[in-house]
Image 1 (cartoon, rainbow, N blue to C red):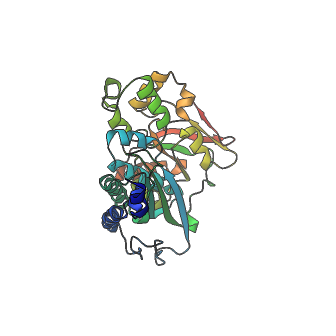
Image 2: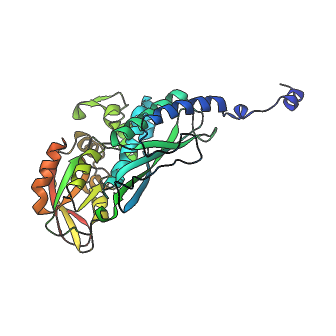
Image 3: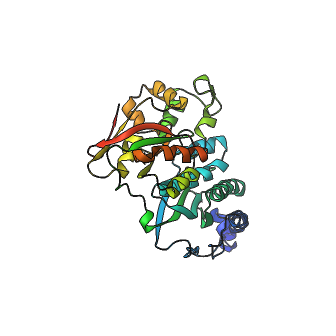
Length: 350
């Protein structure tokens, strides 16, 4: 191309790497997927400058909004390598749902932010399909988001994904942990695997130290490494909703980055601590194998990974049997993993 050609040829956004027409077609497909999650409270269409959502005043007398925002971390790196994208959306939604569920909040609506160097319509659709399916499963609406195309910012084939959720709970039903007292029982709900935390260390152990690939079958975990690492972050809302309605929990902790060690103290009031009994629940094989690969101390494992427990419930002793019944009816397994004691808002292990 000559200088004259460069001087006369019009430059478009597509020349800079952003195809507006392709992006618009992708957004139309996203709009269709999001519509399937809409409830009667959604007052706006996908594509506006803001999403509109009306709180049901007949259902809530003194509503409090509860919000959270999060991402899925370096689990994305494995998704890229495996070209597996439909579960990532569910990971994100379920993580955010769990974060507000611990305060007793029912999820109302969700919004996502998807950023990539060059938009791949097929990958975007698979991600949003996962978002929409998880939203529908959790009873919340996907009312909008942002799909950003930023050439040169992300490597080819990679993207970042974040989500924002808003839920609602009656003011007098907010679960804060203030009613937690010594003698309360700790009940742990099992995780599917790593969920969305600890992947930087997991990738170092499994890929760098052990030399595995996602397709490597490992006898110790009875499966392929990639499949194990991509297990979906579990939503506890179906069970938690019933527990909240039955008014039988004093506090709940979503066990994410920091493990039980750092997450449980977040819901403990002053003057209390927790004793967690090791061996009271089955530790998933993936955690045991990673610990052996890196000769990692037990304390380090417990403050990095969930170790097989994705949610901890704090239950008044007199309501323990009721909780067992509620969990059984919800099809959820619960393990008695410890108790609340007098202390300084720390977790000790026995």
